[in-house]
Every structure is written in C-alpha cells, then in structure tokens.
Length: 262
Image (cartoon, rainbow, N blue to C red; front, side, top):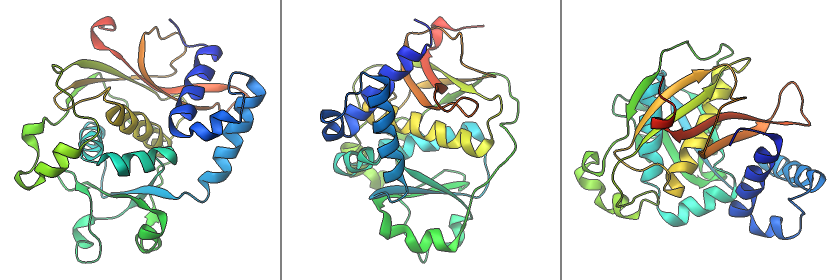
C-alpha cells in the first residue's frame, strides 16, 4: 500500500463519516466533487467552531510536546472527546507561559516541564478571554532537522494520583501490550506552526481512536515528503496541497515501526 490520491480521498471520507455522519449522509463522499463540497462546508464551519482546545506554548521541544499531547488526549472523557471530534479536533496554538495564568484559567493538562498547557476541549466561548489575552503561536521556520528520535508515551502509572477518574474516563485507554509506531512527518515547505497543527490532529485522533495507547513508543522520522512511503498506515493526516489546492497531501502518518527500520 502506497500513498495515492485514491487512498487519501478514502481516508478523508472516513474521517468525515466518523466525525459528522449527518454530513456524510447527504454528501457523496465517494465522488471527488462531493468530497470537495463536504470539505468546503467543513472549512467554512471551522471559522466558528462550537468546541475547541487551546494549547499554550512557552517553548517547544518536539518529542516532549508529542508526549504531552498524547497524555492530554488520553485524559479527555468520552463525551468531551465526541464533541471535539465533531469539530475535527480544532485546536488553537497560543504563545505564553501557563505558569503566569493559573489564577485566571484552569488548564486541563500541563506538560511535565510546563512548556505547554491545554485548555479544553470546551465550548469556544469558554476560551475567548484566553485567546484575546495571548497572541497566536507563529513559527514561519520549518521543523529543526533531527535524526530519528524515540518517544515513549506516558503509561497509566505515570498519571497523577488525583487523576484516577480522568484515567478511567480516557477514551484512548486499552488492555493491549505497548506497541512501537513510526511517526513520519513531512517537512518540505511546511512551517513549524503548520507542522504542529498537522501533528496535533493526527496524534489526538489516534489516541481517541485507541490507535495510540499509554506506554506505546513512537519513532519520529522526518522526511521531505511522504510520497512513496509504504503502508499499511494506522493513521494519516491529510489536507490540501499548498502547491496544488485541488489535490490532497499527506502531512504525517503512523505505521508499524518494525516495517520501517533504517
């Protein structure tokens, strides 16, 4: 299995069916025109989301952020996760220090090093004050080049002692043995800010789906483009191509690590 336009369209259609079945029921997602119309409707709705998450970034270490992102998603209770999925895990990234905001805002999760904190998922109105206070996190440069790096996701045993209820309610929990995945990240012509958006969607939804579970390991592999990458794929992040807006592009992917060792 290799990445093709047919595969990308099928995966986008599946994501729409899972998140918005009523939209899928009145749109022919199997046709390019119908899928394009559905994506345009989703893009218009994204300007006024009902439910979103805010991620406040003080600094960014990609492996640490990936680990904390998965920990955050694992703690989301199923009702909140379902509502967030309907808005396609919409997340706003802001530049700031959560240590200075604790008296005004209650964060759902804070990274171990305090470099990132998450508010939500919640009604968009609930984060209006936070979004007005801080500026958007913008990073026009690309991801810093890095060799393959292994990240181990927090296990259930790593959860705080007072978070038992959150762990029980987390929608990504499972009983299987820890797995080792490869996380392929496209970098050519993609800013750091856009990479975070793509990775956030991929990782959060993989956790909510149970594809990623506590204790799993991820080998981060940066590549210019995912064209030619062989599957099977356990998750894909897909969006329009910046160079060819009428075509789809894979920006990140999860595969089984043992099938992609150097």
